[in-house]
Image (cartoon, rainbow, N blue to C red):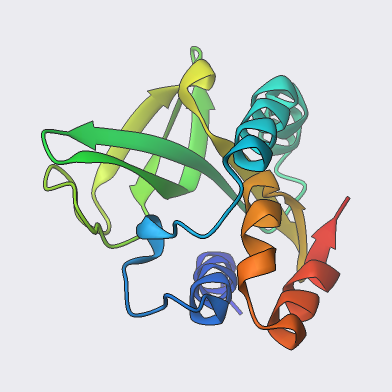
Length: 154
């Protein structure tokens, strides 16, 4: 399966497991804020690990999560097909927006390494990183949470 398609399938699995799946995937609000803050901090503090993997192209696909804000609020989007150069990530918006109106699925986006809220790369069906997934698992049906949890490398 093409690496970007597989990544979108993984992201879709995360969304379809959510009890709020009728909402856009960027608007999940059933999580512990402290756990989410810790997950974002973990991603930011380990971003050099991600950059090393990205530069070596040793995985099947790479994504970073970006907070995007407009007058309507802030949403966090997975940026797919990621590249890294001169301290910036660039790629494509990988989710449909729920409240922000300044982006749409597939739009190009850039952000600095300090702005990310998460990172992930896939090697086979294993998810490396994706720390913001963990705080959301408690809101999923147990069998679906367990299937996703089994893909996470921790």
